[in-house]
Length: 231
Image (cartoon, rainbow, N blue to C red):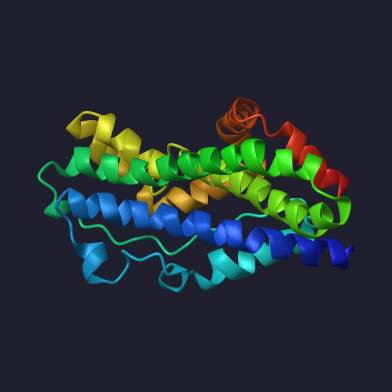
């Protein structure tokens, strides 16, 4: 097991993961609050302090386990869900869908921001600055922002799987006629079991992987992903 590589992966991926999940959950609560539900605000979840959003398993143990068992090749995590009470919305079905969509949307925006930093700041600096400075400062930053782009893409695509309680399931519920939406929502208590089965059988790849490849190509991240493999 390549422990130096795993340690390096922890260093460069921890910050992007914390930023991604913090903004993801904050955006849910922020939009819900704007639409009339102050639950997240009252519970202290409208904050950029990642401690308020950390889930011991999803934010710490799961990423560490994935780092170890995949030898640093794959990292993923999640935060504590922001509490939302749809009964406070004027239009519960529609506003819940909008609040749910806010998480993946902010992750895609963070991925775009990271890609812009990579293309227009770090890549030019990597090519013109002295080698020692590039290796000690620019290259680690390049790795961090590459992970930021990738983590945010994966988090957005995973959450848009159309199974409640994932965001995609709640967005889909908002588009269904009321009768069908009620029936569809009844699978929520079993949603994570269904998602685990979809992942274990590889079926989830048909939902996630094409979108990940689409955004990686759209943001032209292949060059930076190749650098991660080299270093």
